[in-house]
Image: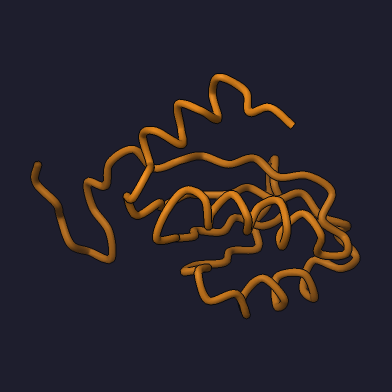
Length: 104
């Protein structure tokens, strides 16, 4: 399977860089608590929020590189029973995190 142009550019940009991403997840709402509990157990998942709106769960993940992140989305998150869809927002830069302000 050939990578899309976007995937190739992401691979180049995030190569050997820590990847932080916010992922919105749509799930079977009758299983939202079970799915959230399963996602919580993943070591690269830093935060899990059950929310209202366009998504049912929002997660923040951090991986040592883009390849590991990609494996998580394709091989782990997408296979959790009850996960219908997800949308990933890649973090480009961090301005404030855990009450710490970062200056570039």
